[in-house]
Image (cartoon, rainbow, N blue to C red):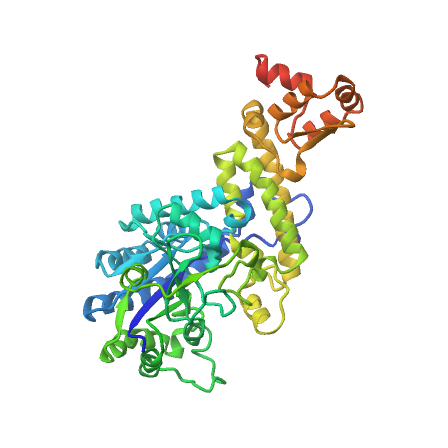
Length: 479
């Protein structure tokens, strides 16, 4: 029987975009930061902070101080930490008190709880390391365990986190994974020596989704009953993970969720169950095997435990491709542009656009602030259009700096062809080099027909022709 218990709680709150399709023509904000519904976001955050980040955290803090052996793990997005610091400092102080007990672990994740991995691995790495630095700065804890957003996981993600120095990564337990031998075990990745802890989704969802469901045949769920299930679970350890908002937001205080949270450590310890943090579990237990999950079979903890919560329809896929294109510009502009782009990369913007049916659709509807996935799709499309215009304005403020750093996405690169050869250019430097190497008649045709100037205008955001750009950016002058 499993005698060790690992509980991980995820804290994240999105920055919701204004219902832009309801704005009168011409009243759209010029500053992309004004695209976010700040007053509503703050209202929601302060409510959740009071009911969860303060009240539930005080219960956990009391248990950490009074129940010998109780330990817990948190994963808090960078955005949530920022908002806590600005809008709910009392909540942050309780989290800091939890950290000071020495009995809580704080994991790394993407700073913006974003789809960074699906855009660019380099961006993913930067967000994870930026998040780790913030956790250390605010909580005094240097993460050694990590997760990708919403438990998204594959072999490449595991090896990237291993290369960044993390010792263990958490993800979802999925039966079809090659090498899977049950939920309640520690694994390694098939391609690199990093521990992989898989969530027991049934026992997690008993609290996260079913706790206040009166139609459930196990209702009401008490701490004593739940502890008996943990005690009877086969395997080496049970990994329970859920949104922290479970305690006071998704299940309101009147459901008895606070009392359940208060009693659970006490009832578990009565049965001689041992609490571990994620990192302790990876150090104490031996892996029973390795999990082999290629990139095309990436898993998550949402819906069908794949990527369909964010990429399940054509609108979501088109939005991701557009976001990927804008990333190339934001990265070349740097500074303010990068921060703006990252705010629009948050996974929630895509989650709202899902057109699911059945139980999964009900969950998406519960979280959707717009009331309709189609409205969410339109709003995000408008927001990206406004972001695109703003990025172009920022690029032109220092055009030469931008164009020397910019590299177009593959689908937007420029091609010149002769009968025997092809020249490909994804940047201004590569274009100038291709024009030197290609036959004169090929280059002349592209110049005369205006193809090159059109590419400069539409992709490189130039307001002048090639000769002016060359003279300004490579021959002196200021554009």
